[in-house]
Image 1 (cartoon, helix red, strand yellow):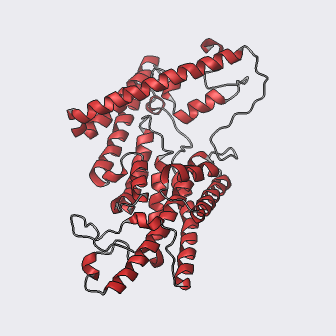
Image 2: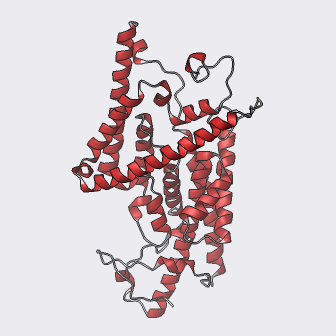
Image 3: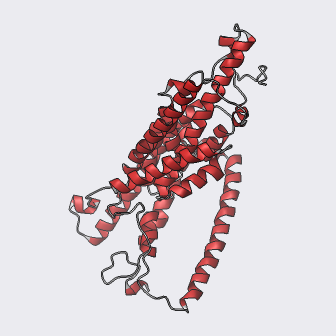
Length: 377
């Protein structure tokens, strides 16, 4: 039975307890409605992965570029370095400022990774603006500026939020999924108890279909970001979904697989792979090198633990200080400090994908990364 005396929000709107969606005994008595719902959900799932790839493939690349010193014709070494540094600093602060201005002014829900909010939605709450088209647009634009600014913020996890926004938009195109979502109790109060119960069952079934699409979309986001469809399904199962039946798993796997195949077909990295780099073992490692691998693991664990603790300390301090009231200025200052600290180091200056790719690539006779040159060994 469904309790009709549900809690209302501040606007007096009626919200169903979405935890009831997870009860396996809910069945649709109308086979035609069930078939329409299944067809719409599968069609929307296929459309989600295509839109998801389009978002991803339009982020990374610039075919030809020249430095500002070359553009201005400056060939004096000191002047060239100075112009490149200040132009890099200006670009970083401007791009980070644009990103934070867009988010704080137009779509506050686009801030952060969005995983916590998505888990909240999947566990039974309604956050309509979080998956809206405006949030999707601002998220796609602002993440490009944020990555271009040089900030150490990856775009991979944010793609999950983008993919679920696509899922929500596509699901709204199908009345069989969208119908009666968020129905106000003021609109049905005059109906009889039986009719109200029937409408409530329809809302439950429709929102259950939408939640399956959101689970499939989150799997597609991880699949495209890392080129790993199985990892996307596991991520949706372990980190996102509140209830994960076999039907949802099948749709998540289908969506993640089609997204990965589409990524492979379009070849955005221009290397024939679904990932920007891979490790190929062309040499035999010596036994004494195991010591250095162990040291790398030890220092990595120490530094990682220290960073987590420092981040926790700073986060607690930030919540109690005036910094939280100046989000825009905070982002710009962090971007400027990142440039000042990292610009002098050619390895820290490059993006994370390029650096990790150079670290995993075998040294060759012609190497331009700077890692294999003798003066750095």
